[in-house]
Image (cartoon, rainbow, N blue to C red; front, top):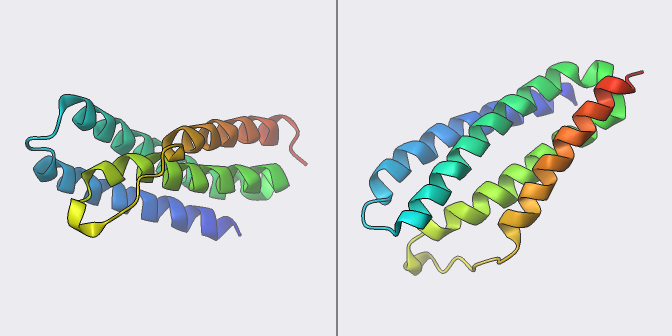
Length: 124
């Protein structure tokens, strides 16, 4: 399972770079608030890609709590970053807006950090 978190972290890093390249071209003409949100999402994805890789390296020592942190980071990246990225999708794609995706994803990311703290404090 440790390899899963490292692999997902590497995939999140790869897609973060791709999203940054796409945003460099797609942000032309979007409202400044949207551009700022997208830059924040790209930054958060990068930080949490590294957090996933670290979680995979720590999981054997951190046990169940570390694995739960990896799950929370993964779900948080999908919901938080995905919820913001969908604002850039062309209208023709008909991607529905999920109003609470980003806030729910943010809570998942914070939960991941809390679980990682607990895994470090209460490691087995």
